[in-house]
Length: 336
Image (cartoon, rainbow, N blue to C red; front, side, top):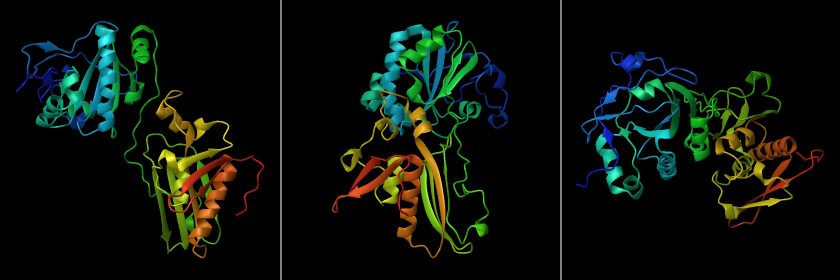
């Protein structure tokens, strides 16, 4: 078998002197500003002596990923380029909970796996206990034994890493996962029995760290029909309200009279995706008495969103309907 260019660390890696004798379940997680004890020398699977020690002011990036995460894998060539360009100013380390055989297979048998040259820690549990997260990729930035940033992979750019190395102060938006978010909880604060005979709705801004979701249902006991959207874009909201796919292909989307398309469609040339979602995705909930039909409810929600967001969504075509997003004036009256 061809020797792997990427060094794979043994499963039981004594990451931190401080935690060497501590069970991972009892470890206090680290966040921005926390100090990280020195990394000791470690045993490598295919090298007699190695160390993760880096020079003063150099940036250590722990890249939590998986061989089954396609977005993680697609980011590796970019990171490899950054590592090569900046040399000793940065050290990127891949961290995975994958079995060693699984990750070695990825490194040996895929084009991207063969092209990269990072140290790798496999079957990890300790580091995830130190830096808990639910969604990958997850990037922990460390400089001079101090956590300076926790981000997604899109923030690992040449300019950001160079700035982290050279600037006296450095910050990026914090990636904060909320895996315990309760999607069943209502966004409307009023008790359900107080609104069973009337229509009630609310529009909220983005919920940080919560994956998007669309839900609807009937509460017979309360006598209501409800619709709930979590962190959906304008296109996604109107797509669901017209019973179109959440992931609408570009050929089925048209914009009319839209002055600023960046509010509708993400453009990676203008912003980070995470920042765009923060500014352009929304949470919405509506409740209706059961006497309202499904079509009446959906039309009321479409009217709500049009009035509040100044965009309306209509459909065109029969065999393969397209969604048309049209900007409207704030004073435009939408018939319910």
